Amino acid sequence: MADKPNLPADTDGDGVPENSPGEPGLLRGRPPERPSPDSDADILLPGPTADAKSWLECGWAILDASGVVTKMSDDLAAWLEQPASDLLGRNFWHLLSARCGNWRETTARLQSGNESFDEVKLLRPADASHGPEWFSLEITKTGNTSAVRLSSILPPLSDLEEGAWDESLRTLSAQRQLFVRLLRAEAQLKTLTERWPGVIFSQRSDLSFRFVSAKVEEITGVTVSDWQARPQLFWDVVHEGDVEELRLQFKQARQTAQPVTCTYRIRHAQTGRIAYVLEHRQANVSRGGLLLGYEGVWLDVTRQTLAEKRLSSVAWKETLSILTMGLAHDFSNVMAGIHALSETFLDQEGAARELSDGLTLIRKNAQHASQLVHRIINLHQGKTGERNYYNLNELATEIADLIRKVIPRRMQFVTELTAEPLPVYLDSVELRQVVLNLVLNAVDAMPQAGRLVLRTAGFSELPPMSQRQGVLPRLPAACLSIQDTGCGIKPRHLASIFDPFFTTKPVNKGSGLGLYNARLFAEKHRGAITVDSTEDVGSTFHIWLPQADFTEAETEARENGNADLTGNNNHKSY
Image (cartoon, rainbow, N blue to C red; front, side, top):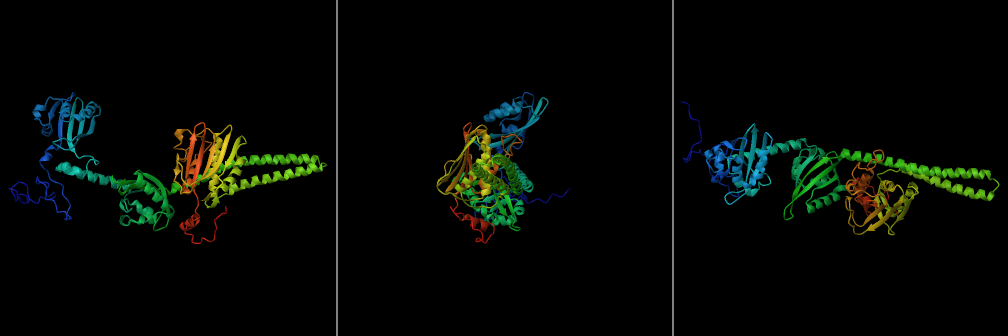
């Protein structure tokens, strides 16, 4: 006779050995003792109780083509509260509807479906005798026979709140389900974080990380453990030039509880390398308005950002070729006049008075031609990347002089400049490129004739803005507007016109980068671009910029690590 296995002793005669290994208290049919509030021990889930009788482990039934029960398990019959013998020959779907009326529509779809296998999740609402219960109903169809299986399942995550734990986890089956769900979720999260090309994170309200994927160390040079323990690290790696704007974005995320997407620079803690990250951030806010933390992702978009800058250069070269053709045409007309006058006065050598007047006109036209040549040279030699202090009115006047030379004569062009000076700190070459792009778009929108207005204005308070791209500028603000009386923009296009490569022109007529470059200019200068447009009436583009307070140059030099601020006086007089 074989020896009995060495089992733990049953000390109280209830048939269940004491100190059963693996799951203390869960096999004994009663809840384990709860630890005291001061204990560090994990709180154990309650064991099975009489309430667990409503849990259906795995009930099954065999049905004929009309849904009549030909065989049924005792567990399912007990759940239906009738003997299995009494249920044979009855319609299974009617039995389910009688047990839970709100299942009728769902089970009818399941019964009439043509799939060989189907599954639905069903909720049995709470009543006076039980709390809410969730079930999985599966059906397999083979010929004229169907097999159905009904099993209790845990509620979805959204319903599995603190108050539902005691009601939902009273059986070993439910506890095993939860354990499997946790393992599956952990495995899926691990796979996602390892394969995701960016960073996935969960931040506390102090900006330390509850969780962050390992990719963060590659981008920032800071270890995961340091990220989780040191809140101030976040602002240490964010480029100082983007800190202020990023804080405003966080404030917006907290106040609106809406996701925020933005791009900013971070500096690698070990190498000093600057990277551009695209961040999507969602604030978690309590019902009382308390900030609990953030969830979000990072993507390294450094290569994309560099490519966009190169594309901007390509787009400007395309615009430059159009402008050069217009200037060259004017130059040809001027030189033709000089040539004609020269021939005329060669034939009239005796007319001294006429010769003197003609030579004066020749000199005037020659000077005009020289100015056109210089404009062409300036357009080709202008380099972006250098900011300076300017009066926006003076820049607008210079640009207006160029606009008059490049737009068709059928266009009426006027300027409406404010009398007050508008100090701005910007890249004048980039501004000129943006304005000329907008002007060319306006010309295309007025193929027959029209009126073009270049306008400046100052604002101590911002008016309502439509179709805004960029950030609200610091007050007081300056605005440069380009208005046309063209065909306008279709309403369905307004949300997309500032996207890269969006264009309504033929493929060989436009790159779709002009308005995108205008958006980048506004964002780079801590401002915005907006548009007001009515179809068949015209459009007005507004470039909004913060007025300079004359600290920008020092801030920029400090950000670039330039300690010598005396070698370049960037102030212009007004």
